[in-house]
Image (cartoon, rainbow, N blue to C red; front, side, top):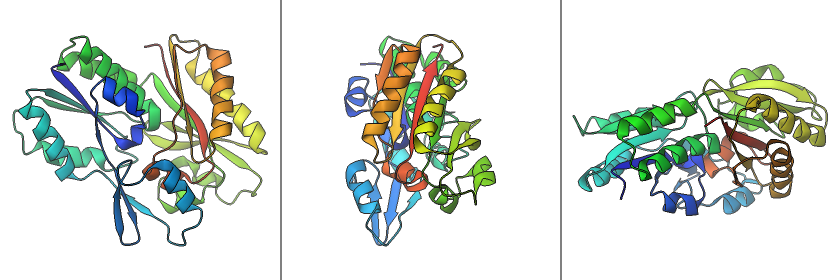
Length: 282
């Protein structure tokens, strides 16, 4: 068993088989729906979440992983003689890193490192996977941390939303505010840049917006090899497969992952969100 254990949070949406294969610990984000408090990916799964979101008159809110949950995870791994690398959602998008740092105070002097991925979804997931693969091959905690930190400049997220309403409501819209109030038939394209959501451009139709997402991913990859790609979608699987297929044909990735946005991220992005994430040059 690897001496270094990788911890991430549920917004990374790493498929279960990869989580199991590389012994990654996933800390669940928190979804609050009326009187219910649900653990992201544990108490509620994406399919059930998106079906309910379309019909429930009560809109959910979110909260970050609790310090107590991180304390539980860190304590368990330390008892098993692991060193710990936690690679987490951008601190500009969530208070998750703050919760992890609070938990760290209970383990003074312990071998625990925390890295801000500066991103979300499988852009975060790829950083965690690369560190976990290195750990499984015997890399040290410092080496795994260096891989994760390098990954922050080699990953990206480009996506389009049906409406900016959800991002605006959740306070996650960032530079996308300049697209508020645009015509209903305009499809905003956004990206996660330097840890925050930024506006890229406006496209007039859904189909054109999907084609533009592929073009932008190709531009962001910039010819770097190898390439890893993942879809992200909120209740739009057929279009997500189209996106991933189109990008794969252009970029010839060494790894592709089909993922759906977790309920906590979907709360802020809204139904119909579609995009791609990449890691290039690592």
